[in-house]
Picture 1 (spheres, rainbow, N blue to C red):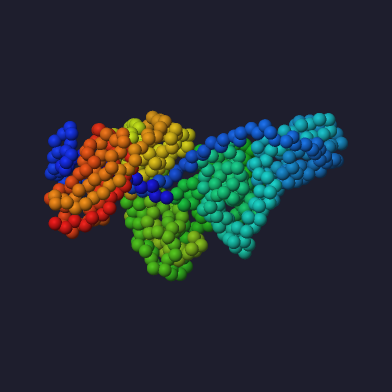
Picture 2: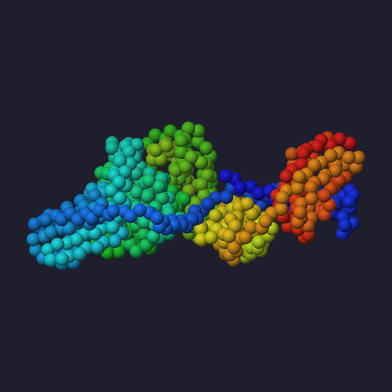
Length: 615
């Protein structure tokens, strides 16, 4: 919902002439300067929640008069007798797949805790089945209690998902894969469409606290469309295995990703980053040399061991490089559509790429080249422009871009390419963070900050209680008042401001939060009821007296224009002189209670009737 606030505070207060009774404490003076239009609100775009605040959930009150509940005796966990460890492993695995909370395994010989841990690990080894292996390991890692007593072992796994949720997963994945039509595709096409599905339909969960267990699951990724990397990689793992593509999950202390099998070797893919970053598919089917340029993609044991590499040999080159004899984008045998003409230029937030529209092209595939390297595919778009963000560019590096027409499947090329001009990128110097102060005023919370040289606009955010930052909008001013109607009585607020470009999106510097302020709503006075009538000297405005109001602020509106502040008075009438009125124009007036400082508003307003003025 658009949250537009009527800004009536920014005009300079002007004195004005009133009919009797006159001002008691000052001489009435006619307005002799042009009125200042103040209706344009400070907020120039709708609020966008960038991190959803999490409201605390109150504990239910205790009820003392409930009738006693007869509890049934607890059910004994099942016991499975086995003759060997090899016989025990599939039983343990199946109990976990079925989400059994507690079970015993009875062996013919004495067992130790080390034996129990080894069996536990063997049960979660990679089998190639979608709901086992790495998927099971990362969904049953919420805590284990494995107890060895003589020849008995008690398993008490804690799961991130329920049996019902897993049943839903199986049906939903089948539905999605059928919808994608993967069953008759090549292995590459299967990987690509499933990877695109995960990247396009799951966003990273920046909202919930670390102890919110669902965000670690493939269920949350598929059902809610939000998860952390563990949810991304286990969803991709399960979907690819269901489609017949072998893959493994790789994790380190910071992050997780997948390796997928294609053409007898494995490649790295990172769906979390390719979904999270706005620049297309940058981490798709890469070799270790390319992939491990980022330290968060460095393996640790056991996945870094020679034994693991022997089981899952990695390609020595990226897939597209290995499959293409030249580093140029793949050629189309018979060009059908023309090559777009591409131009690039450095902008405040990166490099902007633009090209002409090609009639008949459903989409465009964008590539870039850094220094003397080969072409790398970024992704596809239906637009005719794209900005490569500064975070993905190296200062001092030289870049070229090219664009090719492609089909809606995001893979089939429909024509040749022509390279753009070259640009050596120089990182844009960031502007300083404005210093923000806030204070309570009669109609809300006033936010002020210092002017930053070179900042075209400022982006304003607020935070309520312990929630995340919420973007309000942008302004060219250095102050903004958050209206009382958007504030909660008793809530604590902080604000921050960042320099931004005129596109109202590109942030040009860091931020510093203001101090916090606990907001207590001020009791507002009623809106005066305003009437207007034509008199010999112009238009007379009258209104009822509001108890407790020190002064009244008067505004007028001409035709379909905005409200214009005229001035303040202690009286309950005012005559707008004929010399300020246009023959044939339609006027309305309104009045608001205000403080003696002639600025602070104490209540809302109600517009008068309209009147067409004729001289």
